[in-house]
Length: 51
Image (cartoon, rainbow, N blue to C red; front, side, top):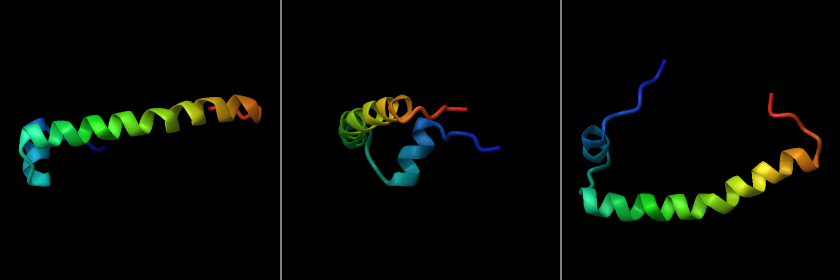
């Protein structure tokens, strides 16, 4: 079983400052939204279950 790292530990592992990491994370979240929407629509359109 894996555990997510704390914010402090994650920033230390990435060798990033919090301000820079925040910019990069926001960019990632914004870029991933269309991919998630596409996948959410793909499975029902192909009559595939999510189970």
